Length: 85
Image (cartoon, rainbow, N blue to C red; front, side):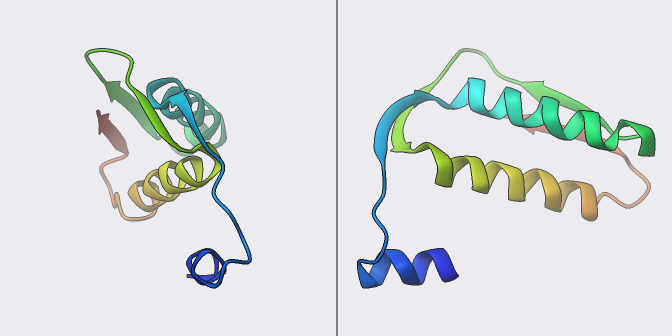
């Protein structure tokens, strides 16, 4: 919410550029996988091809991380996280 407020007020600007969101997602999953493997979590990333988007990579990385964090926190007994692109 704070980031959204900054953007709306003009105090922060987006850094829009083209990047490979598939690669960003894979790298984020790998980092989280290392942190959670001791707790029994497994991750499966299902994608057909590399996808490029024009967006603020840092902001998108935050969104992906938040999605993964929520999946971990709310997975209950099923510790197999499946990410589909």
